[in-house]
Image (cartoon, rainbow, N blue to C red):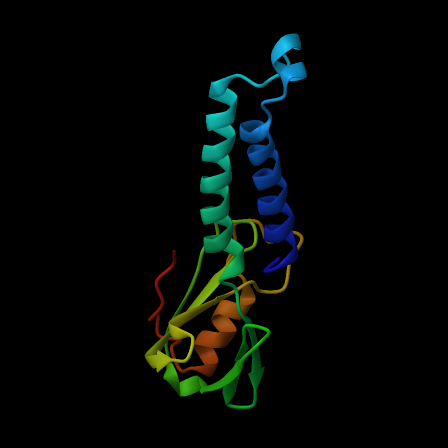
Length: 150
């Protein structure tokens, strides 16, 4: 979800968009098979908006696992260890199908003040909260309702 899907989607739309703008062949002009300008600009807008959205939803995802009394956080190139006591709050966006979970920290980490990860997929979890949110809150001692739902 972090690398393959964005690469394929952005690459595919970028190639399609570029080909629309670069195709000035005489054959296409003669036969009327060149795309209309509105289509070119629509594809460009979709490519830009989709790329920004995919960055926001997928490319910034981290891998998070619990290791004793710490979190092991990785972007697949670098890994850091953050004590569970550094968790300030845990939120979840239940409206997006991957249920991204955001962990906010009391202090800045090498990945910034927060990290976002995609919890394990639940096939019938739809709009209910993912159990990992409550588990992280419990492990960090935040059970008293100190969370804010996105």
